[in-house]
Amino acid sequence: MPRRLLLVALVAFAIGAAWWLLRPLPHLRVATVQRPPTPHPAATIARSLATPAPSPAQTPTSHATVPPTALPTGSPNPHAPRLALIVDDCGQWIDTERGFIALDIPITLSVLPDVPYTGEIAREAGDAGKGVMLHLPMETLSGLNPGPGKVTTEMTDAQIVSQVEADLAQVPFARGVNNHEGSKASADPRVMKAVLGVLAQRGDLFFVDSRTSSASVGEETARSLGVPTASRDVFIDNRAEVAYTEAQLLDAAAIAKRTGSAIAIGHPRPTTLEAVRALVPRLEAEGIDFVLAQDIATNAR
Image (tube, rainbow, N blue to C red):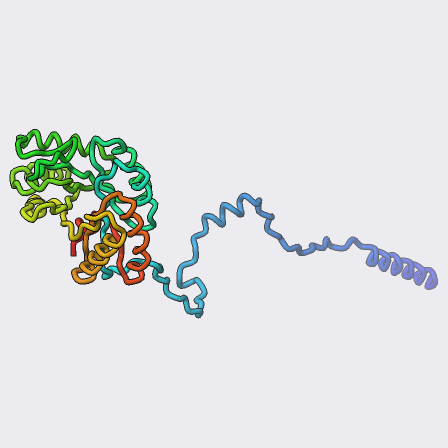
């Protein structure tokens, strides 16, 4: 009996050990790292556009010195003596007038009404950035006919206004007016008030008194009506000679240096064009600033 009990005990122990070794193990959970899904490229772009730019406090500060903005070079000296050159009687000798337009300086062409190239030369000058004026024919003391489109002392105020408006309509790009001849009409206060009243009414035109007569009231009448104005200082080509014209140009430059500005009037003559071409480099080297007539009339200093 004892041996049988021992055998039973051994079998029971073996069965228990086998059960212990072969029992089911508990489920093991493996920890995993959750990765965010990769965003769609379009969503990334939209988010970057919606993100505000960093404020100055968030932006890294650079210690590099930023140089100040340089001033533009080649600007004209605001205190330089100014010289305006007006070429009168334009619209008749187009080849010479084109020579003046081709000059590499500001220059003003004053164009007569009712002559062969009135509109053509005015448009060419305006397209080239030159100044354009109406050269208004006015009655002379000598009786010399100043040409078509003239204003006379016999006209009524209404007739003068109508004539000036008609003449202006013929000259495209005209920004101002100066008198052609006019030694009689320019000395008549009534006539000049009617003429300059047209400019005052328009509000964007200036007047240069050619001063064909010392008795002219043009400039003072213009001032009284609030029209920007100036007057001629030198006629440069009363003689069609290069040397004479050069000497007159030098006189005009001397006036500009002395007073700050000057207006010189010439005509479309080959000798005048030659003299101007020759002297421009010298005068610029001396500090002369060539300007349009309107720059002196509207910005008198």
